[in-house]
Image 1 (cartoon, rainbow, N blue to C red):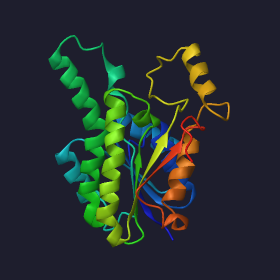
Image 2: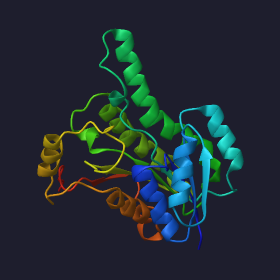
Image 3: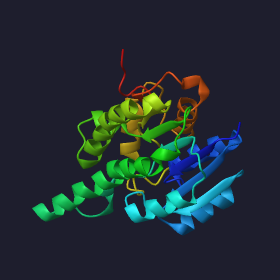
Image 4: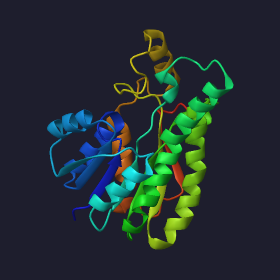
Length: 241
């Protein structure tokens, strides 16, 4: 059965890998993002029933326009748009700058997911799934980015309670250190890379496909009794029992 899958921030990195995984399964995938040129490049690379829509997940008006272009049913929503806005400028020098930095990460990594989910809420039907892309930063004492991802984890529990009676599951997939994405803006040193790899129990950095495979599983019929959870894909950096 062909499903409709909406992936925010689907033009690069983890989002593009998620889109590719669902396309490989024969699903219709809609990817959104802020940059038209990035979406066009992804469309040229990805194969399958793909639709691209320029949309900023933090902009209510753009989300309302997106909703008008969606089919009657969205089977899977993957809230992937985000990233660490702390890499986009110099450290703040005053309280105004600090407030702007925190708001930027909360908007990008939490509010965008909240608004997108609300925008498509009525399109989600029984058997549907919401998958939120979190981060192991939520449990590592990080600043505004980690705080936003920690807030996502608790919001996901609330969301699972809201949508569960309708047969919709809600989970967070939390990557660890993922190589070969735009996340670090090419600011990683060799030492930083080696330190992150050394933290893992498997001796390698994560790949976007590692996350994409878990996302596809958690949205599949095989995972219908899994909801309200955080599934870490971090190579064992934060083990649990």
